Length: 101
Length: 226
Image (cartoon, rainbow over all chains, first blue to last red):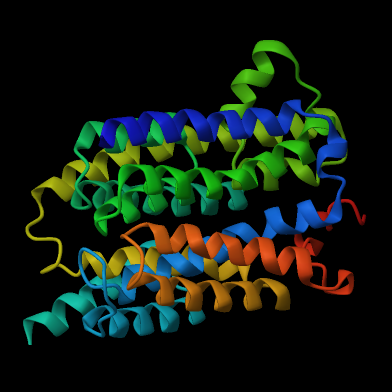
């Protein structure tokens, strides 16, 4: 199943890029379509943050654990303009440390 | 030149993170590397492995990746008249059509400069992204239990870092906040992976209902405003 997702979504993402270079410009001339397309990334990424941090492993319910503290650290690191790797592994280190205690 | 170096370092560290997160989310090294070769768009790749790692189905993971991939379609629409490629050149160009290559091409004064910026950035990032994905995946395989290492928290931080620069307009901040609430509410009533897809509906609603004056598309349109 994972291979199907990898290959199917991989091919689909390529076709989305190719469509952008190939379809007539007027498709996106409609302001509402352009705006919705522009809002999809922030909506999905915000939802991914929420689910990744709050959902219990395997889904089904919300739990507060070390991940929320780690996200707080990620916010601080982003405010301090830390590079991507520092944000990601800095917050991992905080979660690991809290679980160790 | 300094810009390119900054982009290269950022891509390298991003690729390392993706490789490590990929294998700790349940993919093997080959699957993680094929994603970087074939999909080659970071946010979608992170979304796919994130949804799978959180227990979501392959279908919802794939749909989330595709929805995030729609922004590359917008980039293509912007760049098509600038690059003016047909046939096989267009087919190859489409593969390296990503955030960074668009950013380096869209503001160029003429076609030659735009093409140079596009290919230099796209090509460099393609090579770096795949090498560092492989390195990260191999390193990730040597790690122990991902939870002990806090790597589940690292995925949330990665999504937040991707979200951060997209919160520049009030409308995008409103959309993000509503999407987070909707996703949280959907966790207990839908299978894993579905809450994220439900939250995409927020983008559709806000985009369709918000008054014209609060146009979030200002970010994309700034190139045309020159």
